[in-house]
Length: 430
Image 1 (cartoon, rainbow, N blue to C red):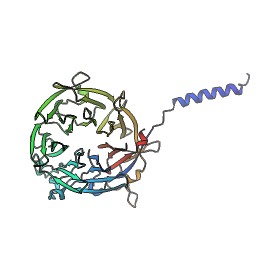
Image 2: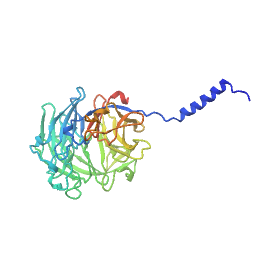
Image 3: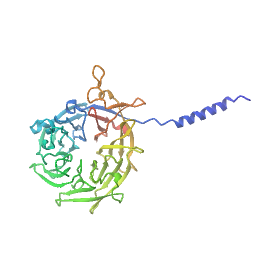
Image 4: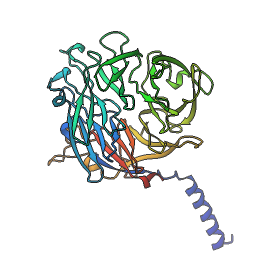
């Protein structure tokens, strides 16, 4: 038998090598972020919610949660990396009630008025076995002015119910409020849609929408929108001073059960609006789909379009964080159940894109700040929100609560345990 030539042997090796390389899975493209932990005393259990917004001054304003204790509005300056509490909610209202009577959460998506003032509200925490739901007096809308470092507090709009959403229209001297009863007390009183007169402090109820965790947006004509249980969309027109409950279609048809847009018992739905006020974007928490609505049409039906899937091939997703940036880019911080954690992805969509773009999972450059240990090497309480992946990359492992894009194109995401701001720089997502 003749020996195999070197050239032939080399060609066989290269063929096998190429085939082996082709079979190797592609390396994960991670989006790097830097973690900044919110002051521990303002979020002692490492928890928080949707409350993050950029002020006109370029600083971020973040709401916190300290169950049975209090809540704070924290200012984060990306330039200096400094964080400080600028509003102590109990000091602002002049009452320091502990337990379930405390103003334990800033749960609202914070909003900014044309004046630069920050609008937010307080909400109830969790009762223990000895407490009644009626022990919570109700939440307070608040307005913080960074220019004067002062806070105006408005009265409780609905007794025993917290504030879930507050959206200002300073041109008309009003803010729109959505309350949250956490399903109690009182059947069906989950989200009362109201108008607040910013000068007099008086409220007017528009509708009990019965929809859990409703966000409010204002369109290009100054009309305010709120979801309604069962798939309706409430629209208040200040010119006619009337509320309509509109129907919706998605791609010309009623919403499907899989969309979670018209659930009989409700489903958390995240809303935000385009800078021109003509397009409403929506993500149901468990649906893995981005929806847009055209707000320029007429009639009793709002036309929606399914823009596509957020994370392809994901078996289970959780999205509580979506925003529209200053230039119209939609940013979705969504997690998929994978590798024993809730793996964070950043998904973006720009008008004109064919579908949402999954930018990839988000890594943490400085995981040690989220996994702080004592002198004996033991994790501190309510730390440990990071997991090291097989490739050595560190990432967060819990669901994500809020997202904000700033004027410079940076994206900030709120993570849990400890309550942390993840900063993604613009160059990371170009």
